[in-house]
Image (cartoon, rainbow, N blue to C red; front, side, top):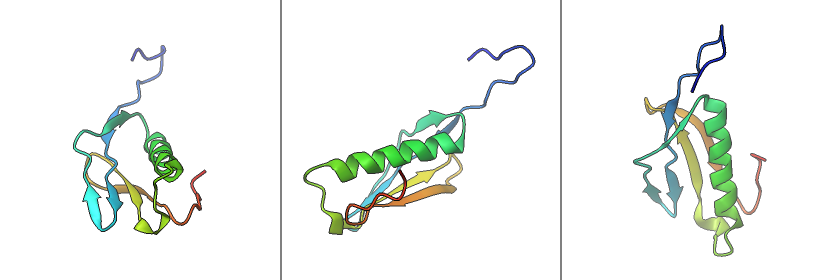
Amino acid sequence: MIAAKGRKAAAMRRYYFPIFHNGETQADQVGELFGAAELAAQYGARIARDIASDPEYDPSAGTVVIVLDDSGAEIERLELRGGRKPWR
């Protein structure tokens, strides 16, 4: 990324998106790069929406998408409950 004159380029950080579903955790070993935690949280919300829109999704499965930064700190927790999508 080339920064505009007088501006610093945003530092890209890696964020991870493990998914808790039916009592098991699906780890994210690769993650994604974002310039801000807010962008990573938006991406996490997109993952949650995609899961909830799957015709085979079971709302009683207790599914949670967690957004972690590269140090392992939790940035966002998106719980899928019976079709409610508070993260729109």
